[in-house]
Image (cartoon, rainbow, N blue to C red; front, side, top):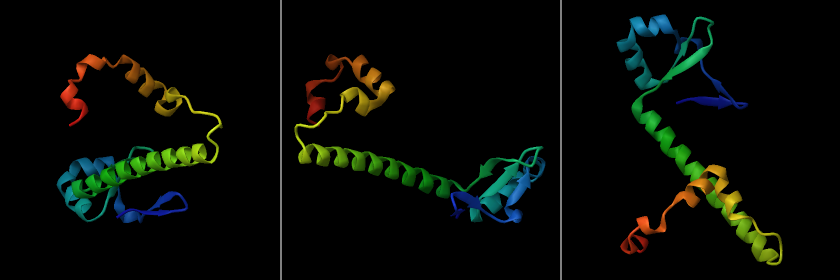
Length: 121
């Protein structure tokens, strides 16, 4: 488990290994990483890589995606509540909601590419 304090990672020196140590003793690093993440330093003693157990990585990735979705839902709920409070208020353009890349991708969609059955599946 990784500890975060004041917006920074907090860990002890025994969890830091040099890139040279990691390459020479990769099997040992993998075993240690099953218990707790290892932080690999470059030549300047700056941490550049983290070795973490796959199950922990998967849990972090799933939690991050859930948090991203929750944030999206929260923003949508806030916008809907604002519209409910003042229906005559300013509307938000669809392009702003999707962002530039999302809106461009939306415009590039061909409505005929999706079979009608896919609309109701």
